[in-house]
Image 1 (spheres, rainbow, N blue to C red):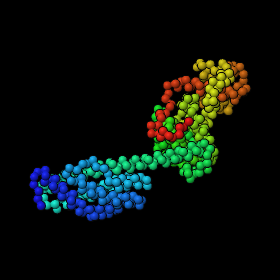
Image 2: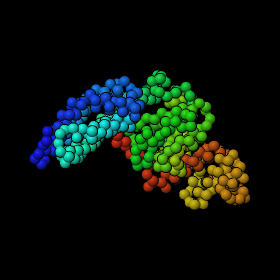
Image 3: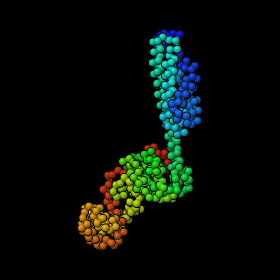
Image 4: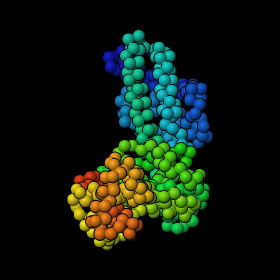
Length: 422
C-alpha cells in the first residue's frame, strides 16, 4: 500500500508502524527480556521486581505504539506496572542504575525494531525516511519522559523508606536515652561495647546524617538527625582506649564542628556519653568552651561546664579566688596564662617555660608576681585556683568571640514530629 498527501502520508506511515508494533508485541517483549537478562543481571535479583518488570512490558509496548500514532500526547502517565516496578526496586534496596539500564535497553530494542520494520509498511523511500525521522524523535521523547517519571517514583519511595527507617531508629535512640529497654537487634547497633557519643553541627547551616561515615576505623557508627540542624553520632568501640585515634579517623568537612562525651560502656554508657556530648555542645553554643575548636571533648571542658549550672555564681567564685590577678589588663592576662601553664604541667617551671616559649627564669618571676597579686602562695588552694583561671578564661574568651557564628540552622528537611536535640 502506498500513501500520498504530504504530512498525511507520514501520519499514515506512523499509524501503520504502530499497528505492526502491536502485532509484533510478543516478539519485541521476548527480545527486550533476553537482552536485559544478558546485559543487566543485577536487575534479576528480587522476584517482585522481576515480576513487575515482566508485567510492565506489554503496557509499555502498547504505550509506545500509542505514542507513535499521530495526535498522541507526549505527557502520558506511566503504566501502573512500571510504577510498581520502581516501588518494588526501591523497597528491595536496588540502586537506580540497573533500572535505567533496563529502560534504555528497551529503547534500543524499539529503535532496532523500527529500523527493521520501516521498509515493511509499504511506503516509498522518501516517506520511509520521513516516518523514520518522526518515529525516532517520538521514541526518544517518550523514553526520556518515561525515565524521568520512573526516577521520580523510585526516588520518592527510596526517600520514604529511608525516612521511615531513620525515624524508627531515632525513636529507639530516644527510648534508650529515656531509660527504656532497647535490644541491639531493634537498634541495629552494638550496645555491649564502649561508646563515644558526639553532637556534630555546622555553624550557620544544617548537617545531614549522610555527611557522617557509617564506619570509623573498624567501629560502627549510628547517626540520628535532630530538628535543630545537628546530628547525634554514636561510635561503638571494642576497647576503652583509642578515643584519639577514632576521632582522628572521623573525617568531617572543614566547616563541621564536633562536641563529644567521654567513653563509657554498655547501654548505660551509651546514655551517659550522649548526655556529656550534649552538655559539651551546649557549652560551645554559649561560647563558654574557651578557645574555638573543631572538636571539643568533654574532658577538656569539665570545669567550664560548671558555668552552665550558674554562670553568675561561677564568675563570682573566680573573681573572689583570683583577687587582683583577675584584672582585665594585658599584664594580668600574661601572669594568668603563666600560672595556668604551671598548674597544668604538674607545677613544673621548666615544662611551663617550654609551653610558653620563654625562659625558666621568666616563669619564676611571673609566678612570684602572681603570688603578690593573690596575696598567698600558689600551693595554697591550688585546685580552686586552677578552676578559677579556667572559668575566667572562658568568660573572657566569650566576650572576644561575640561576632563568631556558632549556632546551626534548623534542619529544613526534619520531620516536624521528630524529637528535638535538647
